[in-house]
Amino acid sequence: MKRLLMLSAVLLGLSTPIQALTEQEPQGEPAASSQIATININEASAEELTALPGIGKVKAEAIVNYREEHGPFEDVDDLTKVNGIGEQTVKGLKSKVSFH
Image 1 (cartoon, rainbow, N blue to C red):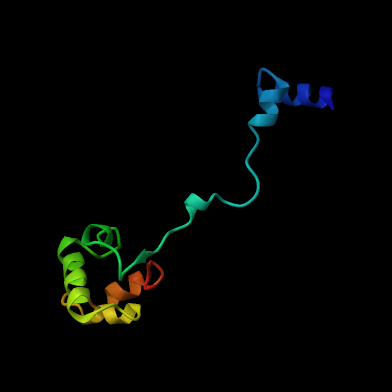
Image 2: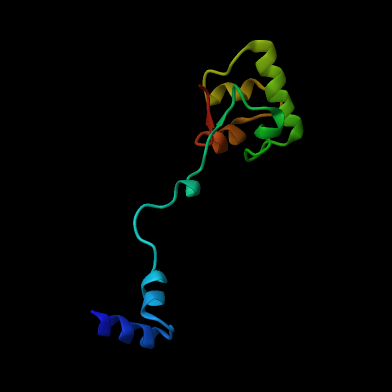
């Protein structure tokens, strides 16, 4: 085994067999940080909402104002009730927002 590691190190241009072991491709599940988090539309601030695609400062403030006046959103389609948010915007938000 030691000869195999040394030969691998030489073939890979590495200075030590330990380096050959530590520079292998990682295996297993992707890191949790690579997963996309959702934003709770009923709790997020206007600033947090601007992280959503198609939602700028004005639309984010409109979402917060609507929520304050009419209560929490039940589902993503309720966002079409907010002035300036149409079906195309809602379609892009479906997998990026939560409600509870």
